[in-house]
Each structure stands twice: as structure tokens, then as C-alpha cells.
Image 1 (cartoon, helix red, strand yellow):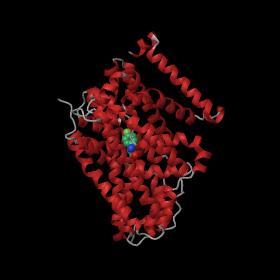
Image 2: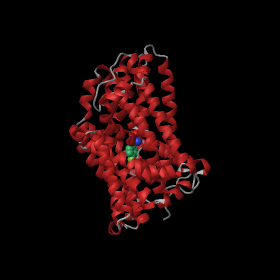
Image 3: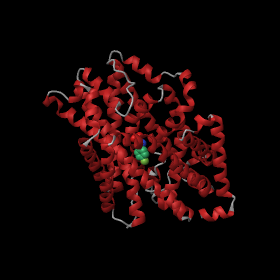
Image 4: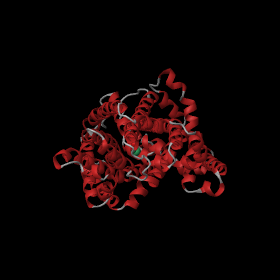
Amino acid sequence: MARETWATRTGFILAAAGSAVGLGNIWRFPWMTADNGGSAFLAVYLLVVLGVGVPGLLGEFVIGRRARRNPMGALRDLSGSRYWGAIGAVSAVTGVALLSFYSVVGGWILRYLLVSIVGPVTGGAPYLASPGPYFDSISFGVEAALFHLGFLAVTGGIVFGGVRRGIELGTKVMVPAVLVLLVGMASWVVTQPGAAAGYQFFLEFDLATLQANAASVIAPAAGQALFTLSVGAGTMVTYASYLGEDRSLPFDGAVIALLNTGVGVLAGLVVFPLLFSQGVDPGTGGPGALFVSIAGAFAALPGGDLLAIVFFGVVALAALSSSISMLEIPVAVLVDEGGWSRGTAVGVLLALTALTGTVTALNPALFDFVAGTLADLLLTGGLLAFLLFAGWVLGPDSIEEYVAGAGALGARFATPWLFAIGVVIPIFLVFTLLTTAGLDARIGVWPTVAAAAVLVGAVLFGLTRNASWRGVWR
Ligand code: PFF
């Protein structure tokens, strides 16, 4: 059977933007920001989105479109080495790992949505009276696992529909709906007394805090930047592999990044003024940050119960358009490499993630680890591999693929881009990995940068010069 492709170019853009726009923008972002010193985090995060996320996105696009295969098959076929294939196969594991906590949060959202809808009948949504204790009571345990299964089932249903009739159709509805509803909410929030303090908190640029914290916020900010753009997991390799013809990758990448950042900022323009207008402290840390604070705001607002339905509805749509892209990675691997039918692949993977997600839903410490450190490590390591591959194994072929359909303006960035993904960004990514391991605390920031440069230099030397090493990789 011929491999499926997107029906339209907008379909691809919306699917990729739908993957990017998600809980990362609305839920993980306020959590990470609160944990890592506010505006300092925001500034570093935006820099990494621009300097690492967008070129990284293009690296994944180039690999996916050139190979027209899943991440495992793509790295193997393009290099002719099964070792690279094994590295690509990690993407399938990443997809499962991400889904194992993402659908737990998706379950929380479904639950908040449900109790908001039935709230008016049952005498008010239960989170309104006591936001903090309510979140604590529902976030982990058997019921959390059940809602996780519900979210997973919807995700599986869409992916089962296939590339065109599932993912493309679904995101064509979900992404515009998210945009329209968020714009509507943001314009309504402007009219709320006290909103100004929220804008100030969110948009204020605090240089002193940034200087004091820069080193310690780089790694989590980088992880969050990759997470929000869905980069490093192989989702973008997979989605680009369904492109039918050569259209401009840099243009599409720029649109996707702009949409993602736009939604992130919009969400901030809804959430923070809402909190401040109700005198709620946005600084409650932990994964409950959004749920506890936003519920507090809804409780205090006239018409808050209606607003809550719209808000959790938006978040649910945004979450679904991302979770389907996580599931699609291992599905594509099983379909392309194992020759499985889509139905069997989806079924088996749903059974697997039902299990792993249930374990996560029962264990808060595990959840924190998977959603925080493990996600950061997998995405950073994954992106490092993709970029070294595009930069040094594909090399000039990457440029050719980048330029195809890119037009004169897009093509102008090709050479600087190759240098960035081949040298500069890998050093940065290794640096963040070393920082996550705590090396900078022991030897200092600049020695850690130097160590990262030496490590990358050694790998590049091996990839390009050493004949016996090349024998291993080829
Ligand atoms: N970008 C998504 C979000 O911000 O919620 C999360 C995500 C989706 C990460 C898909 C990685 C991925 F492959």
C-alpha cells in the first residue's frame, strides 16, 4: 500500500502547529516559569526557541522529507547504517514516554472540563470552593488513571483514522478553534479590573534576575523550548515524512514557530491578568500551578463557570492535537518497519501506554521525573542526534533538501543553518546535558562550555575523519 501523505499544505502546517501548541504552552510553561525564577526563565526560553528550536525543527523536517520514513527507517536508510537506525528507534521510546505523562495531564483537563460542564447542575464545580485541596485529591490515584485512559482513547481514535482522515482533519478543526477561543478570552480579560498588574508581571523584562540566574535556568529553559516546539522526539521527522511535494520548509517552519509562540503569549495574556485581577498568586509551584491558580480565578469571577468550560475546552483541544503526534511516532515505526496495519499498531501502543500511564498516574514522584528530567533528557539527546545526522551524515544533501522549494529568500539561510545545526547547536545541547548532570556546579560554567565543545569536536572528528570510526557508522 502506498504511504499516506497530507492532502494539503495547510494540513501539514496545522498538524505540526497542533503538535507544537499544547499543554507545553499552557500548563508546563507556568509550572517551569514558577520553578525557575520568572522572567529570567522567559527570556532564556524565548532565545532558545529562536536560536535552537527553529533550526532544530528544520533539521527534523529535512530528514523526514528526504527519507519519507519514520525516524528509525529514516536514519537507517539515509546513512546505510543500522546503528543510526537504532538511534532513530529511540524516538519510538520517547513517544511512549511522553505520552505516559501527557495523557495523565490530559485526564486532569478532561476531568476539570467535565465537572465544569455539570457544575451548574450539581451546585457548582467542586474545584471552585477549594482549588488547592481539590487538585491534590484528584491528581494522582485510581481516578486519575481512569481519566488518563479516557484521554488516551480519544487520542488513539484520531490516530487510528490515519494521516488524512484522522490527524489532518482533526487538527484542521482543533487548531483554529484554539486560536479563536484564546483570542476571544484574551480580549475579554482586558476588560477586567486589575488585569494591568498581570500584564506587567508577564511582560516585564527583569535584567537583574536574569543575570543572577542565567546559568541555572539555561537547561530547564532549553528543555522547555524543545518541548514546546515538539522538537527532539521525532514527531517532526514523522510529520515531514508525509509531505507529498517540495514546498518551502523554512517558510513552513517559521509559520509553525510563530503560531506556537503566539499561542504561548496569548495563553499568558489570558492566564496572568486573570490571576492578578482576582488577587491569586501565580507563584504556586509544581505541576498543579495552572490548575490551582486558574480555578481560584474562576471561583471569584462573575460568569466564571462559563469561562471555565471554554478554557478547559481549549486546553483539551490543544492537548489532543499534541498527544496524537506523540502516538504517531511509534505507530509510524511499527507500520513502516514492521509492516503492521495502522489498527494493530494503534491497538498495541494504546495497551502499552495505558499501562505506563497508569503507573505514572499512581506515582507523583515518577510523574515529576518523567514530565521533567526524563522529557528534557530525551528531547535534548534526540535533537542532538538528529542534528549531528543532518549536519554530518547528510551534510550537503541537507542543504539540497532545505533549498528544494525554499525560494531565494529561504535558500539564503541554508549555509548558516547547516553550520548552526552541525556545530554551534550541538555544543549548546551537550552543554545543557552536562548542566542537567550537575557538572557546571562542580567546575563552573565556562569550563563546562569548554568541555561541551571538546566533546562535540571529538564526535565530529570521528564522524568525518577517522576511517575506522566511519566504518562503524556506515
Ligand atoms: N509541543 C507539545 C506541547 O507543547 O504541549 C508537546 C510535545 C508534543 C512534545 C509532541 C514533543 C512531541 F513530540
